[in-house]
Length: 233
Image (cartoon, rainbow, N blue to C red; front, side):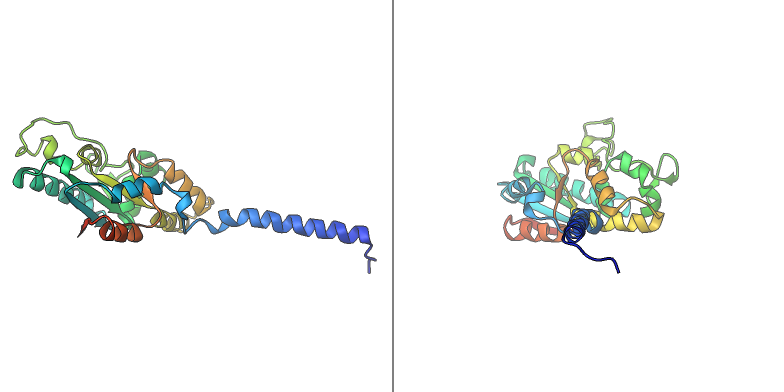
């Protein structure tokens, strides 16, 4: 047995502390950030959304992509309120709370190509007939007419970009993003950690998208405190 001297004991203790310190530093990366605290995200902009003074406020709770049908529903709501009831668009506030598979609509072409989102979520690109490697729901369509009754007019455009221009706030769920990153690691046997994938995705959120800590909690607050009408899509 090797005799333990005071010097060897101190050296061993220091090494142990260093090891635990390293493990402690690695823990957030290994465990991920399934729960965001209020200091970790842009809660100030979310509070502004809650307090928006619009006369009519709606929150769409969207889980499934459904080939973008929910985007058409939002467009129909804007048109109905504007043309059918004569409410100016500045008096409306519509928020689209995307979680589950629909959450990926909030991310750009880089994410769709790198993580093969179209193949993963069964989204077909109509221009190729193959699984989408770009976010087909984002880009604004070229307007061929200004007549709202014409399907090629801006008022019939269901793209995320056009709906944003009409004041729709798209929300992304951080919790869903964490869960989806873990699903991708399992599906594709990726060597990246889920947290690295989440950071990659967050860096490629579409312009104007607000990432909230938890969508189900955000929707509850928008209803209770913001008096948003709840709609499933």
